[in-house]
Image 1 (cartoon, helix red, strand yellow):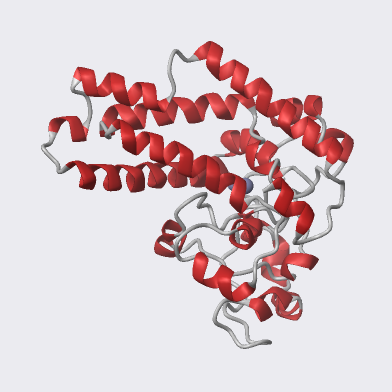
Image 2 (cartoon, helix red, strand yellow):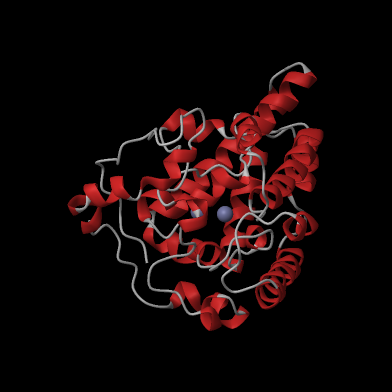
Length: 293
Ligand SMILES: [Zn+2]
Ligand SMILES: [Zn+2]
């Protein structure tokens, strides 16, 4: 993905690659070390343990193996999707998750940067899911490889032909689809929560085709945290959950007051999948979303 980003970048980077890359990957190294120290096994190890103990649904039911593998992969993906929705919805969890969103650029290293406490919570949720589901070990292995692979893919700052993207995003979350989720605009950040399978967002009404200002015009990051020396440096990232106040569920007045502006800046929808140029797929949504900072 990193090589693809150099060969065919989607948008120019605001901060650049080197400093962000070193700091984002530094956080990955720290998280890896921490998880190894804290947990005796990861999800695959837990699946082996659950099978031996007879824990979980699929270790209890007599399901055909292949069906158990497929259903387990899809079910685990749904749990990850739901977890992602929740870390946006609950203010205290959003404090942790905003480390992922505060990156001022969007590339393959963004896909791996999460606060250590969020990584620990994710691991607990993942282990609990495996213990309750009792999936075949192969399913967990497939899921882990898929999730890591697609997270790198859909955070890639890579250029994909629009018709290909439009077909591909029925099967997997594409970079253009997930980039909408990294928009500074609250309503756009509260859409496209999927990391791997794209169906949950379509099914539960959180799918958004494109950013209003288009992929070149959109701003990446979150409100109020725009200093690269803080949000793109390791100490700043670690401190981010404990800084400032989460504004919670105050109404974003711009959502209420500027529908005309939204229409005027609906550049992104010109590139909507399946839409003729200039045609807007989604008129400005009337539902105000919580302001996030
Ligand atoms: Zn998110
Ligand atoms: Zn992301």
